[in-house]
Amino acid sequence: MSDTTEFTRALGEASQWLARLRAEPDSEDAVTGWLRWCEADPANGEAFERVQRLWRQMDQIRGDPIVLSSAEAQPAPATRARLPFRLRRWGRDLRPMRWRVAAGLVGVAGALALWQVESRRIANLPLGVPAFENRAASLPDGSFVHLGAKTSVDVDFRGSERLLRMSSGEAYFKVRPDKQRPFIVRAGALEVTAVGTAFDVKAESGRVSVTVQEGVVAVAPDKAGSGWVSDTAWRVGPGYQFHFSELDGTAGLESVDTSAVLAWREGRLEYVNAPLIQVLADVNRYSRHPVDLSDPEVGQLTFTGTVFTESIDNWLQGLPAALPVRVEHSASGVFHIRGVAAVPR
Image (cartoon, rainbow, N blue to C red; front, side, top):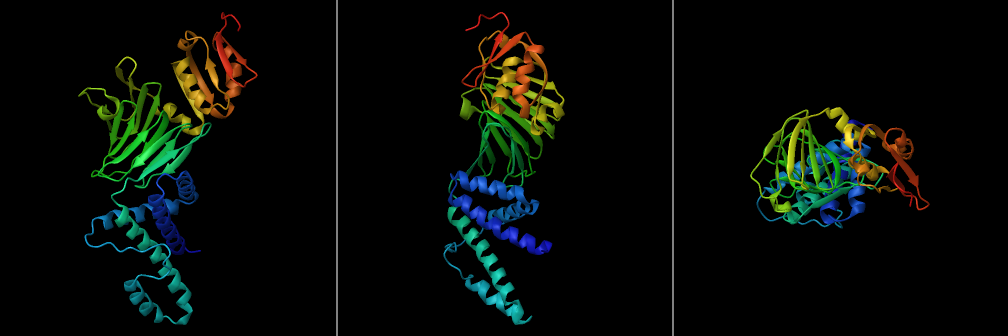
């Protein structure tokens, strides 16, 4: 199959996926199917982006929309008048190609018509992953997101902003530049704005950290969502991490090794003098068995090392060699971590 034929196929499928996502914004099956289709072939993501861009251009066209239902199997009159004239010059053997081209145009025309009809509706695409695994996905604007385990993001590109609302968890964003439409991630009490950059956001138990790999991001309070009243804003450049705690209202900026911070995308959680309670919060997103910290004082012990997300049980079993703790695996499947001096229960 030639590259041209392959890309034509991808364009037709892209228009169908866009139409379905618009028609079924709350369908997990639709979003999951779309993500798998995007990941199956790089040409799919490029085609999706091109059709999406065409939709945005069509949204600016004034006049009465053309409504073409999915049940109609005939090309639009203007298309039917033009295509046969050009193809007949090449003879009868190209008739099957004529209908393949016409069918592809019907798919795109139907998608464009549906876009005009539904352009004012809320179009949230919920992206999420279950426990134990990470997942990468392309966004409708050509940007890229890598979601950590037990993390979900609601994507809303309906207006002049590319808005994403993130749950607790961790996500890495590589943003396609578009100065006219800022890319905004809301997580916890913070609002992170980028035009074209690459950064990581982690939100857990009232703490949010933003690590910048490329470019610069602006970090400000999300007043609408958090009720936090402040006019303070920060600019964070590459190689730096901004962190904020809702628990005590503290914020800070520090230089970090971004390769270590972002190692979670490759199945490694790396720490340097991190409180055990924070380590276990991450571990619980990947572990197939819950990990319970029974002693709050034990949670303040600091841990330095690497946790491989595919072998967490082994890491837990070896933890007593690194810290003064004992790990008990109950019959219910829960791992209990207690200080060595704690009285057994």
